[in-house]
Length: 586
Image 1 (spheres, rainbow, N blue to C red):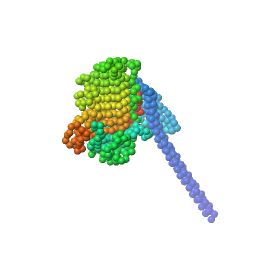
Image 2: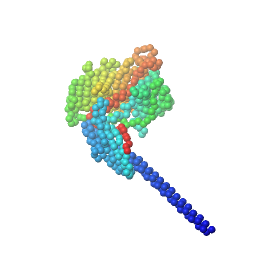
Image 3: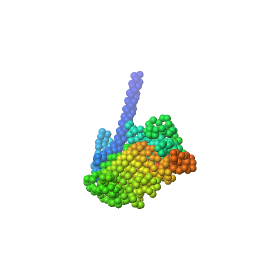
Image 4: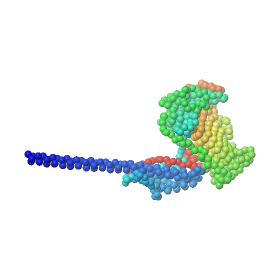
């Protein structure tokens, strides 16, 4: 019996030892798996951190270059040649055959540098020395794990402002911080306005099938059709980038000025955001897009110092025109920095006639550009002009016949410290105008000036209101206006009696457009509707006729902007590096 018990105790001991060994093996296996998982997790985390560090290296270096270029500009900017030299010096300082940048933190370290610097070409295929295409490489290291990233940016000055990318753009400069002017960012399309291209409306879009007109001092709302929005070339459908809502105007406003400042759209309006096809011409409604847009204003007055100089500034040649109405006529100073002293007892106005060329030009007087010759007279500012007073282009004719206008060409950027009036001008432009005042364009025809095989435009950035009116009044053929017009205030335009086609675009804090389709006349015609003493196409007739106000987006406006900007004498701002491509490496 005792022998049996001793045998059983032996088996129990053997089983106990076996179980203990089994658990020990399992425990070791589990521990090994756990430690392996921890190691893999740590390795994975290190890889992620290494990638994040490589991205930080790119961000660090691009921000540092942007900051250094901004500091170099200071408050006054840099002459063009000095900016080009500083841009090249700054980029070369961070090439990979030099030091680049290196930084360590608690998660690891990164090193970044520039591997390649390439020229950027303009619309004519010529290098633009104010911009460079730059390839960066960055290596991140976290606990022995290393990852690389390459990225390509455009670095330098003169990126194209967002408003130039739309046929129509209503801008809310106040953003979402409050302090908005009543109606800011709103666009009003009254009647059969024709838009070809995309639209951006930071506020609300208000649409009517009636067009406002003021005739003999009284206000009328003329029966018309809803606007049309057609796609630009190469697109299936135009886009409406909308920040607010779409409303239909259902009744004639009692107080027009108060109506344009509407904030709360209650009685008299119907919300149409979800059915915008109801308030556009059949089959010609845009596609609604909701996305954030840039609200950085275009700097206008800050451009003044880039153009302005005085008679006692270094390197200036002073030309005095002290007798009244003695013009600059067929004069050429391509290599000189001219200051025009036109301050005489009777008049404080400089006058241009015929062909005149300047390296740079400045005056504190008004400037009138006319041309008494039959052929086009060309005014050329190779490196910019400053006008300290008002600028007038044309002979002032109020005729609807372009044969009665002065034939004028203007090439080069201009800053105007006053108002701009273009009246009685058959003009061709390749010019950017910065205007610290209002702009009026009437009784004129404006086309692009051909330069280097490409047609230019008139681009105006104004702090004041822009009014385009009385062009091709009662005519069946529209006045052609090739240009882009940007206002920090309100832009209002009529295509009711007038007949206008803009190839380019318009942008303002508030846009008001009024138009009908078809004919307009001060003489009766068949099936016309009469308002005051004028006659306008009936609604049925309008359905098959073109609009009297056409806005057609011209993508070449971007190239024109870039080309003319490169002529400016002083660089006052630098663009944040624009990402072209980013690739993670191994």
